[in-house]
Amino acid sequence: MGAAGAAAVMGARAFRASTPAGDYGAAVEPSGAGAAGLAADHAQAAADKLSELITFRTVFSEHRDRIELEQFTGFIDALERLYPRVHATLGKELVNGHGLLFRWPGSGPGAGTRSAVLMAHYDVVPVDERDNWTHPGFSGHQEGGYVWGRGALDDKGALVVIMGAIESLIEEGFTPAHDIFLSFGNNEETAGDSAEAAAALLAGRGVKPWMVLDEGGAVALEAFPGLAVPAAVVGVAEKGILDLELLTRGAGGHASTPPRMGATARLAQAIMALEETPFPASMPGPIVEMLRRIGLHSGFALRLVTENMWAFKPLLTQAFGVVGDETRALTRTTVAVTMMEGSKAANVLPSIARATANIRIAVGETVESAVERVRAIIDDESVELTVLSGHDPSPISDFGNEQFALLSSAVAASYPEAVVMPYIQTGATDSRHFTSICPAVYRFSPLLMDAADRASLHAVNERVRISSLGTGVVFYRELLKGLG
Image (cartoon, rainbow, N blue to C red):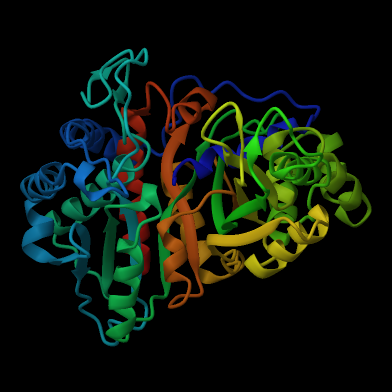
């Protein structure tokens, strides 16, 4: 996550403040009787639809022969049956095979001038049924106030609440004043190209969205000690990604007569240099604002710090780098060596040793600058660096504009207790492909998650609160009505 990005921001829990977090129990419902009643009305219907959609094993793969295409076509067919008004009213086309692009035509003058793109993806990561799932991973089982199964949070749950909101608004006779597009990807989990194709298609038609909203943040409980209300974290940018190959060469030969500093030793030395010399830390504007908003709703000690960031910013930046992996990821480019290869036999010296570093590029850096910094850290010309794939961080979308205010208003209507705050998403989403045609791209799923819920993303026992699905429908209804 995709929605996995919601977990990354929770590294700020390393902060310590003077006010204990509140106990919100199993769910936080809208406080207004009308909103709460509307959420309750939609919750079970959304859950039942999601349960069915989870049963489709929409696991995409870079190896086409491993993809169960009938699962993707079955999902698309089920979507049409479950949301008949959407399909009767909105135009639909397939993009790049199994990506979905809908258009809800606006009825007002200049319908395309304030258009919006709402995004989700329906592909999921695999399930290993040998793991100890409480309920089978593709069962969509409902129990204990949850829908269980792969994709419940990432990201079929978000797709269901978008579709549920539009289905209900059409039933009530609502027509948007401006064009609304829905872009549902089928290969986000493999960094696929369907969203890129959808963005290119819209660009070719001259569409310049006023706002784009994809998965990313969430309404988080237990995220920040000292914050006694839920945190609605909205990604205003996402880090870049770089897969960089490190390669060393040697003469090979028999392992009984090894040379000093052969290919594997020099590769290991390069890896340790990267481990011991991290990229420099910085505190980007969205994180500063996130801390400020946390402080406004926390105890005196934390509020004192966040209201005087001019004095405490260097100390906080340093603290983020040492107190935990998640906070460190918020403030710097990170390097993780994920794959290594040497000789094919135990008694043979490798003529080539290679490793792959997965690098998450912080806002303010680029693929090029990251490669050059890696080169400087390793400081060994015999280590060859090759960019396997990569893209720069996304631009930072404004969090003081009308679009962010509209998102905040929709949160207030659905989760009135929540504090809305910007953040930098450490994972990648499909929305990065839309930044070339829209300056206001945000990442937020209106689903309530506590620490255990977030831990289930991409893991065993992924699940979503049924009550949260209903509240998510309320969020998108308010957002769509606010778009006009």
